Length: 215
Image (tube, rainbow, N blue to C red):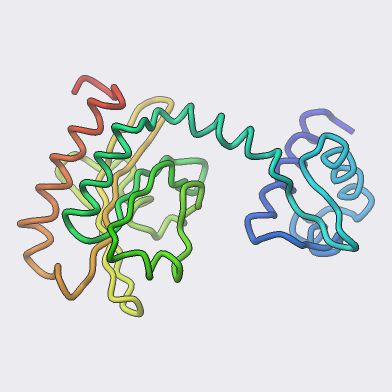
C-alpha cells in the first residue's frame, strides 16, 4: 500500500470518531468507504501505537491522542492573554465568543469563551475547542471577508444570532472572530451600532496579542 495513501486513510479514519466513541468496524468501514480488512489493518496499527482501543466489538480513541491535540493547540498561538481577551468579549455581551481557523472546507474552533449566562446553552449546543463548523456558519463565512464586512447566521430555535468578522487572512492561515448573542437582547440596529464596533476593537487587540499582520 502506498505510504501517502495509508496516511490519508488513517487520518480519515480518525476523523470518523468526531461522531463519538464506540463505533463498530462496519460503521467505520462505511464512513471511510474502505473494505473491512483495510480498516481493520489501520485500526490494528493505531491500537499498537496506543491511539485507539477495542472494547467488545466497539472501537474508541484513547487519551493518548490528547498529546497531539495539546501540541496542536500550543501551535495555534492562543495564549492565556488571548483567552482572557476573548472572555471579556463574551462577558460584555452575555454570549459566546470564538476564534476559528480554516481547515479545508471547515472552520475549526481554536479558542472559545462563554459568559456565565451561556452555560446552559453550551450543554445543548455542545461546541468546544476543536469543534468543526460548516461553510454556512457565520464563523466560516467571515473568513477572508474585507475589513468592513461581516457575516451573520441566525438560529431561531435557540433564539441565538452569530456574527463573524475576519480576524486574519494570509498565505498560510485564515482566521475569523465570532460572537453569539441572545436575540432577546441584541436585535436589529443594535448589532451594527453596539456589537460590531466592539467586535472590531477586539479584533485589533487579538491581532496584536497573536502578532498577526502589521497591527
